[in-house]
Image 1 (cartoon, one colour):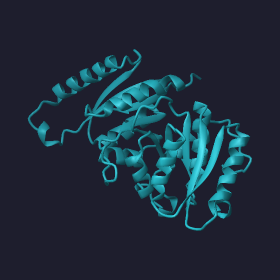
Image 2 (cartoon, rainbow, N blue to C red; image 1 turned 90 degrees about the vertical axis):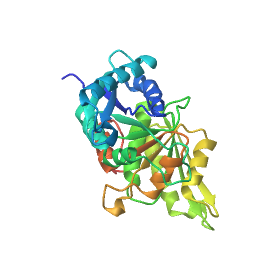
Image 3 (cartoon, rainbow, N blue to C red; image 1 turned 30 degrees about the horizontal axis):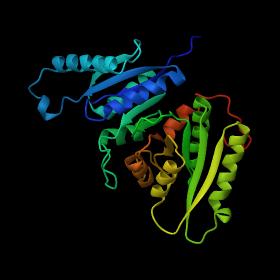
Image 4 (cartoon, one colour; image 1 turned 90 degrees about the horizontal axis):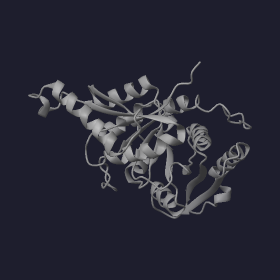
Length: 293
């Protein structure tokens, strides 16, 4: 049976920042031999479209996608699609239809750090997608080669462990595990230190380069320490889960994830439990000495 072509979906909205995702996708695609799909979603419920013929908008959007592809000199096999409907719903369903491996998006509020701003389309795609969503904040010199893996004590860390392994094996990445403890707790006596030791064992068994660091803070927010550390050690991405399993629902973007996506200057790989399950089928060669999966 012929192996299915790996695909990367890049939703395009023709606003100020979408070109970051296209540029990132151009660099990412060759590393996994992926085909790029550019998608524009037309929401005909928007007031300014009431007196415009949909056929003309669809044709114009398709031509713009082709123009974007030529501008970035994307491969000839790049695909273009224009769909009508709610943006996040069409993005998610189209990603499933083409079996996308990753969805690349941008934050439409890149200068809103410190504020509670995150585009509704981006938020809903991150929550709903069955694929990892990479929010492209900048096009880093390297692509997914030095990835920060923040840890906490929630159950979803097990899913993050697997996905960090899968991505590291796919991109020959080094993984940098970190967490934050506050007050007088000694890092070596913390519960998170035990979890970090388990991660190290798993990485060793799979021959993945890694580093560990527990950050000790008297105050401040954990997400700020994580972002600063990612910059200090020159990571090119941060991988996070979108919600805590203890909440019991998937339609939830936790505060930590929200802040990391909103304020990180480097790309953020987000996964929900559905995306983690899909990613599990991509890499078959992971060793499991701890019998976690």
